[in-house]
Image (tube, rainbow, N blue to C red):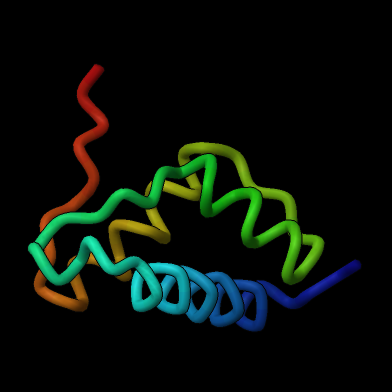
Length: 75
């Protein structure tokens, strides 16, 4: 499935926002959503494949837009 870069970006941001919005742990100012969760969700909804780095970037964008802390990716 081919998507223009702008449409792909918009779709991925919307999906990140949906997943974060539905994550009840955000009420406490955190999230339990992982990059792997997001990657699976995106593929299931849109058949778009992401790598972990992209997943982290889109999730962090959605979290920061909601005033939540970014994912802790230090390992």
